[in-house]
Picture (tube, rainbow, N blue to C red):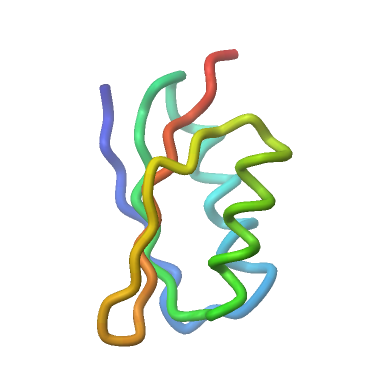
Length: 76
C-alpha cells in the first residue's frame, strides 16, 4: 500500500482537487494520498469531491494556516 504526499500549498480552487484527482489516478485501490493545501475552500471541496468520487476522506486537519487531507483511493 502506497502513501503519497501532494503539496498544493499556494494553489486556489479548483487546482488542489484537480491535482489530487490526477494523483489518485496513478495510485492503486487502497493507496493513500496526503494533500497539503492552504486554500480555505479546499476543506469543502475535498469533502464534496470524495463523496461524489467514492474515494474515502480518512481525515483532515488544520495547522498554522495549512490544511492536511488524507484520502484513500476507492476500489475499482
